[in-house]
Amino acid sequence: MLKATHTTHCRTACKAVAILLAMALLWACTADNDAEDESAKRDLRVAFTMQITQASPRNASENWGNYAPSTTGSATENAINPNTLKIMICNAEGQVMAQVEQIEMTKKSDTEYAITGTWMNAADKLSLAKKIMVVANSQEAIADGNLQALAFNRTDTQSYLPMWGVATLPTLVTGKSNNIGSISMLRAVAKVQVSLRNDMAKKGFSIASLAVNRYNAKGYVVPDTYNKVAQTTDIGFEGSLHAYDASATDTPLYFTDEQQIYLPEYTNVGATAPATISVELNRNGQHEGNYTLYFRTYDSDGAPTGAPYNIQRNHYYLYTIYKAGDQLIVTLHVKPWNVRQHDDIIM
Image (cartoon, rainbow, N blue to C red; front, top):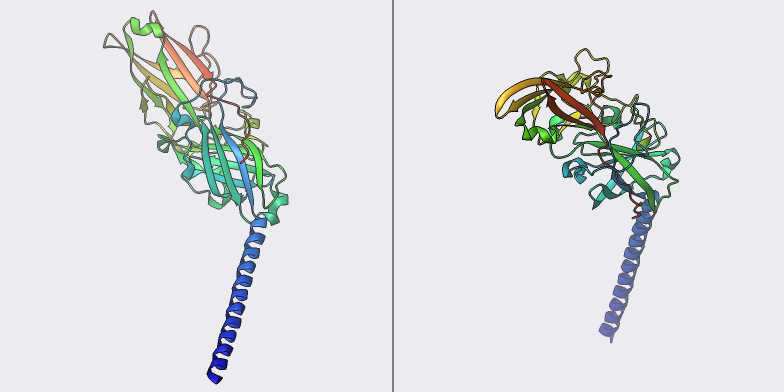
């Protein structure tokens, strides 16, 4: 009887200890969950549609908004490397306050991407958050939040073109997903192409070589007025040129008439050594002549009599050339690169 009673007491005590341990573990888990819930309430999710916008043929006082659609760009021109996406929460002056983390990207079409991410511990800074900025295809880190100085090498643009965009933030709510709407992206490079008029090939002409003379080997990812606008399409052409002049080089940059070349911004207006393009023409396989193309307005006779153009981001400079007697006739179109409008995506 004594042994049975002792055993019963032991079992009762063990059960009591087990219950206490279970309650303690439950309390600990509940406390952890409460802490996680409280932390999550301080975070917020952002969701937006990233759109690759167009270049423009308009004059320098206008901006990138309100243009008719044009042809879509190539796969390279619209491609986004998800591993390079940087999303920043900024104040009204465009200064970086925080980085968005846990970024996820889904390609919706050739020119649009659905993006989501998390702004951690956002609660204390919500009142200061006024803009959201996005940088894509830039391998460089943003030192001390200094977007103005974020640069790229021209040689790093073979597969992906660096881009930037900005939008105004709506009223944000922590603990929830916040739809930002759409953010248009500007490429940080210009596109240049030279081709013969269609009838020139029938006459035996071909382009033997093409080379850009004087160009910038580096460029800045953001335009000069990146921190002064509410959205990307508010950027005006005038005053936004952000050329990396210190990297200008005289080494010819060769390309062909079967490809486009992508160039960082370059200051031609007022330059003592403006950028030009050298063209060597063949006729029936033999050297015909050497010519120079300018980033300038060409008149109806195909002569460069107008004002010079800066080589400006997200612009498409398309030269069409042909021979009339001894004269090379040039037509330069500064064309829309591409744009598409889509409905917003809410994640």
